[in-house]
Length: 355
Image 1 (cartoon, rainbow, N blue to C red):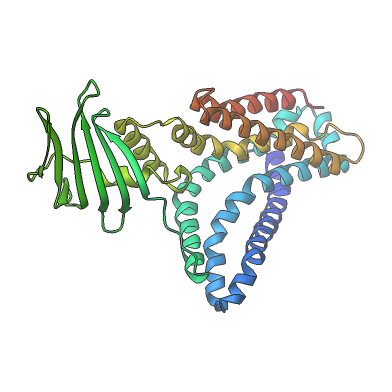
Image 2 (cartoon, rainbow, N blue to C red; image 1 turned 90 degrees about the vertical axis):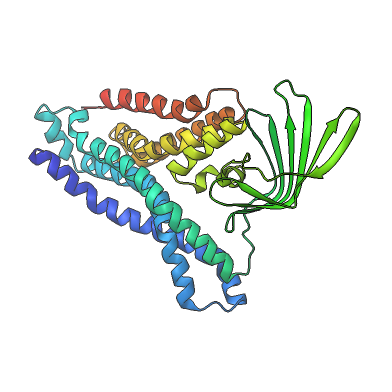
């Protein structure tokens, strides 16, 4: 790293530090004041309110990171332009894209960090924040684990579950329809509940309905270890991908594939978990490429142009993700197309910037 690189980083880091603290504080205050009247209504102690706020801090950092990078990069470059310091840099023969390379590296590193930070820190702490907040505010946060229908064994088994208790691994209100590979009806199994013993489901007082000739017979189901669908199959069918770690989300995709259920929506969200971490790099590249393109009101115009380009990126991403969830485009395209497009655009603008 050259002296000039270190100088640029030293100019950038204090602005970034101030920006991320301010944005985190702003986001935290929004959440606090949105629920303050509820805390007062239920007389929640200040210590527990502080605990909720502390659990929320990693999520506020995740929200604040891209916009803080954008603001700090636009401000730093705009400030250097306004003080005519870059005139000396350009006069020495250093092109703008080379001068701004340390900021590009910081944006790339921030994206890599954001992926692991979101997966390891943000998801569990945000869940803890929601659980604690719901307890303090007397709000029910039951997962959507009722009225579950899944397919298994390539559609030969269809499970209809009234309610799945993931804590005790119990199925309640069970109906299992078995059909042949050609779709012909074979039997129906009904049971009030079933417990997972670690290997297969043990039914309580199960009955089987099946045809023998022209007669529909009802008889107790013999003890069997045939039903081995993973408990997480029943839970993940109603869990949002954004609430799961990457590893759990991958398991969810595999569960849905084995069950023969539609996975387009889930697969789009799964790919989005990877592509969204690149937002920090994209907005940093856009912010740098917009810097120095204005001769008047440099600070204001640079930040406004950077923010505007970032908004266009977010809107494009929303549109492509919506199209991917609806099945109009492949999920991987919906997640990664905006990233690739704006990286190319940012690279072209950066290469053609005033130098």
